[in-house]
Image (cartoon, rainbow, N blue to C red; front, side, top):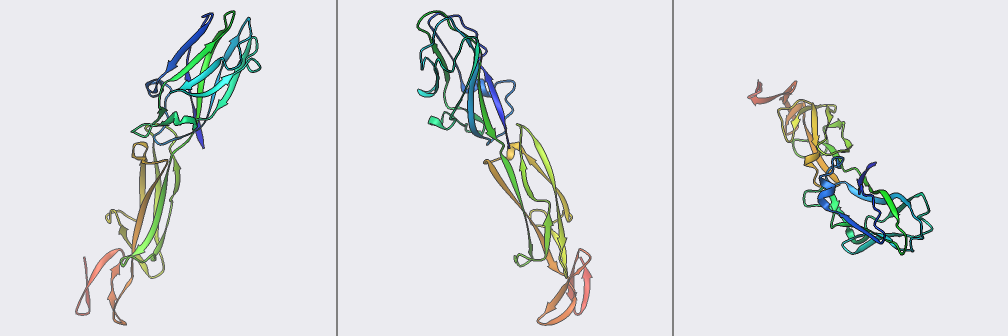
Amino acid sequence: MGGAFTLNFNEETHDPLKVEYSKTPSDFLSHLSYNIPKYAVWTSGRVSGEAKRTTTIPKGSMTIQINGIQLLHVDSQIVNDYATFSQDFDTTKGNVFSNNENGYLTLSGNAIWTVTATAATPYLKNQKITVNYDYPKFTVLATAKDLKGNAQGGTITGGGVVEITQKGQQKTLTLTATAGANYNFVGWEDDESLGSTRTITLNESELTSPNTEKTYTALFAPKELYVGTKNVTAAYVGNKKAKVYRGTTRIL
């Protein structure tokens, strides 16, 4: 899934011959409605506005360019008297929409809007650039292994994909480790002090890519301890470790 961000030019013009004005990367990032999370991905764009005129605007006379890359032109069949206009453009063209060094979406240069008429005054207002984007996400992977590193001992539920939909957002999910037959849960590989159920907090600021993976591993151990083929004592009583002392056990 994804969202949309609209940058308003908020210009009205009655210049009889040519209108040119621009928006910069900082206009995107400082805009009050800018709430796009890190590492979102631009997917499509649309330019729109209202136009009325008393003369034909020649084909190609209304353009949006960024760093010399023309995103679109609007001809007289699209711009009609007292009509609105809207046209899609390719956000990947010329790489003019991109991520900055901190992972936030922006322009790679100025967006320049130019309108040129050959005769009477065109009148334009409510010009907008709307860019659509896919939400970034965390993929939480949950694995189980025994103390020897083998993928066995139990199961973990609660992992999966978590979308981050806005800047500064924080989401949580719960992981639950369940020991298999003849195994006990020992702890989590990154923090053995936690119980079998734990809460994972995912912060937008921790995103490192459009799909940021985080892996959590639950550790399990056999309920019984063997020396060779001989069962000598329980290795765990409940979730407590035990040591062997000449056939007796000591709870740690």
